[in-house]
Image (cartoon, rainbow, N blue to C red):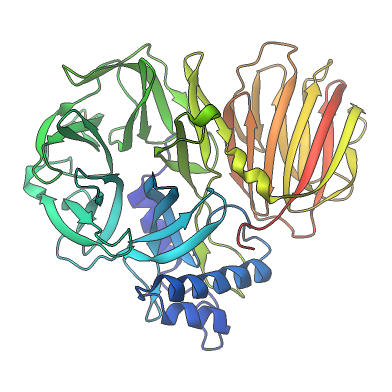
Length: 513
C-alpha cells in the first residue's frame, strides 16, 4: 500500500489544524512562545536564534512527547529536509516549515538551521517566504548548490496550485546564507505534459560545463507511470527539458516525488518518493541520459513512519577525510497530543551515512551523535526465555541509545521492549524473526538480510515519541505517543530461548543544551 503524497499529507495536516490546536493561540501562552512569534520575521540571526532556543527548551520541558535529539521545528508543522549542504565547515539544513504569523499558520516556507557537527543546531531566520506570485501557495521542496561564482543558490518548487500550477524558482544569497533573492526560471507552461509540473522537487548537480536538475513527475495519460525528468542548463537560469531518465521494468507509483540519482563508485542508486520509500541500484549512461536498474526488484529505504529522504549532502568526514554521503529524512507523525503546548507536528530522522554494499544501500546513524551520550550501563550473557521478559536492571529512560547483540538459539522471535511498563508486558517491541528473516518496530517490518543463525546486532535510538532501529545496514522508524511513565527496557524471546550476549545503554542528552 503506497503512502500518501506530500500534497495529501499537507492537506490532512491542514485539516487537523484548520482551527488552532487547543491552547496554541491562547492569550496566556508562555513568554517563550510569544517572544518567538514576535520575532518570527526577523532577519537578525542572534535575535531569531535566541528566541527559538528558548522556545525549544520550554517545549521539551513542557511536552513529554517532544524529542530531544531529533530535529523538529520550533513549533508548528515541518516536513521535507531541503537545501541540505555542507559548505566551508558548516552544515546548512533548510526545511519545509509553517511558522505561526499573526496567530495563523503561514503558507509553507523554508526554515533554516546551521550546525558545525550535525548534532547541535542553531536556528537561523526563516530563509524563503511565499511572497511572490510564483510561490504564493508555498515555498516547496528543492535543493542547494554553490554556483560558478561561489554563491549559495537554491532551486525549489514555487507552488501556486499544486500539480496544476507550479514554477521553478531560483534563489541566491550574497550575504552568507542569510537573505535570499528569488526569480522564476522555469515557467508553468514548460511542463513535460499536462499532468506533470515543470518543477516538483529537484536534485541538482554539475557535470563539466552543464548543470542538471532531476525533477519529479509522471508520464501522464491513462496508464500514467512515475517519472524523473532530466533538465539541463549552462547557467542555472535557462533550462531545457531532456527526457525521463528511467528505463526498466514497470516502476512503482503513478507520480514520483523526490527523485535522486546518487552515484556510488561505478553504480548509481535511483531513489524516489512514493509509498515505501523505494530505491533501485543500477547504471547511469550520461551520454544517453538513461538509468537502467540491475534487476526488477525495488528495495525499501525505511519501512516505518518515514517519507521524504534527502541524500544531497556530501561532506569530508569519512575515514581518512574521505567523502561521505549524508541522508536526511522526514519522520511522519500525528500532532502531539499534549494540549498545553503550541501545535507541533513533524520531525527529522537522525542523519544517516549511506554507502553501497552487496547491491543495496547500507545505512548507519552518524557517529557524531555519540557526543550526546551520558550515563552508561552494560550487561553480558543474559539468558532470555519465553517465561517472562528479562529486565535490564537499573535502565530507565525515554531518551536512550542501545546496542544489543543477540545469539538466536532456538527462539523464533526475540528482541527488546523499549518504553516498557515495569513488568515488561507493554512497550514498543523491537524484534527479529528467525523464521522470516525480518526485523521491525511494532508492526513495521523489513528484510534483515542475515543468514540463519547469524548473530543479530540491533542499534536502537529511543527519543521520547520516536524510535529508530538499525540492523545490518537497514533502518525502521516508528512514532508512538506512549504513557510518559513507561521508561524501562526488557529483553524478550518467543518460541524458544536466546542469549543477549552484550548490551550497552546510554542515557542521551538534549541537542538543545
